[in-house]
Length: 447
Image (cartoon, rainbow, N blue to C red; front, top):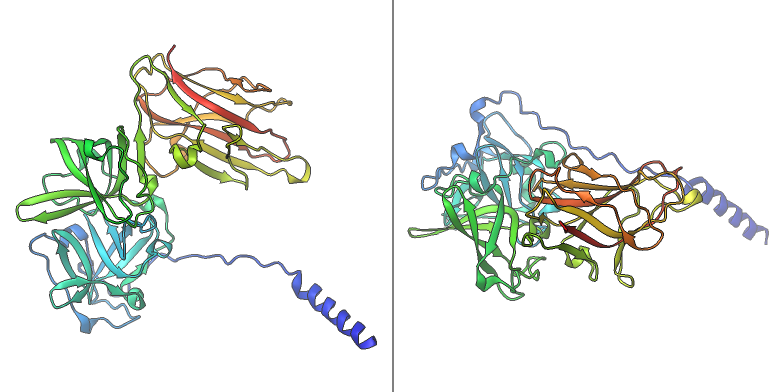
C-alpha cells in the first residue's frame, strides 16, 4: 500500500509539474528574400519581358543549378501567386504574376494553396526549367518528352521556388476590369481579372457551372472597350463550386484569364478559383422592391457571406424562425469583444435618389449603448474583405422587442447603383453588455 501511495504521489507531482504548462504557438515568419552577393540587374527577368509568344526562349541550363545554392549566375523572376487550387478548378499548376505579365507553373503536387496561398510573393529560379506554351498559354516547368513542359517534382520545389516574405492580399497586382483587358492580343493572359456585369448565354441558364462527369465551357458576354467580347467560363468537373446553378442574371466573375488557340481561332477563357469569385447581380425594374428573405440559409443558398473580424461568435442561421441572428455578448465572465459582419451579395438598384433600405428585425436593447449595431455599405467590387472599403449607411434608431421594421436608410449618399450592404455587430468592449440581434427580411425600395 505504501508503494502504491508513493507511485500515486510521484505521478501527481509529475502531472502538476509538466501537465499544467502552457505552450505558446510558434511565431511563424518568412523572411524577405535578399538577392545573393554579386547578383546583377541582368539576372532578374520579368515575365512579360521574356515571354514573346511564338518565340519562347528555352532557358534550360541543368548544369548551372546546384540544389540549395543560389549563385550570381542564376536567373530570377520575382512575382506573386494569383491562382488557387482550393476550389478544385486548378490542378497541379499555379499562376504567378508580376507587373508585366503572368505565367503558369506546372507543379507535381495538389493542395498547393496550403503552401503557396494567393498573395504569396515568390522568387522563381529559372535555371534548369523550360518555357513553353500550351495552345498559346505560357507555362514553365521541367522538360518532358524532349519538347514539352512537364511538372516539377515536389521534392525539388525548394530548388526553384523561394518564398519572399509573408503572404498578403496586399501583394496582389491590380485586378483588371473589362475595359482594361487587352482582348486583341495575349498580353493579359494569366493575369488576375474581374469581368463585370457579364451574362451567360441562354443555353447555360438553369445548368450547373460543371457536371460531375465532365468539364464545361459556358459562354459569357463581356462588355469591353471594343464591344461585347465572348469569353468561355471553363469549369472542371472536380471544382467544388461546380453544382452552383447559373441564373438569368448579370454576374461579376473574378479569376485568371487564359487562352486556347487552334489555328487562327483564339478563345479567351476565365478560370474561376473559388466560389467567392462568383457574384450574382440582381437588378429589379424601377419602382419595384428588391427583397431578401431568409426562408433559406442565405450563406449556403443566397450568396451572403460572413466576415468575423474579432471574437469567437458569429452570425448564425435559425431555420426554425427563418432569420439570421447574432447571439451577442453572454453575461458575466463569458462576455468577449467581437466584431462580426453579415455581408450581402451585389445589389443593383436603379433609383438611388429615392431608394432606401430597411429591414425587419428584433433587438431588445435595455441599456443606453446602441453603437454595437451598425449598417454599412461598399461600392467596391473586390472579393477580398477590406474594412477600409466600407462606410456607414446611417444610424439605427429603432430597437424593437419583437420583430418590426427598422428606420429607413436612404441610398442617396451612394454614388453608384451597384453596391453591397453589411450588418455589423461591433462590440469591442466586453465590459459593456450587448444583446442578440435577429434579422428576418431586408428590402430596398423607393415607395
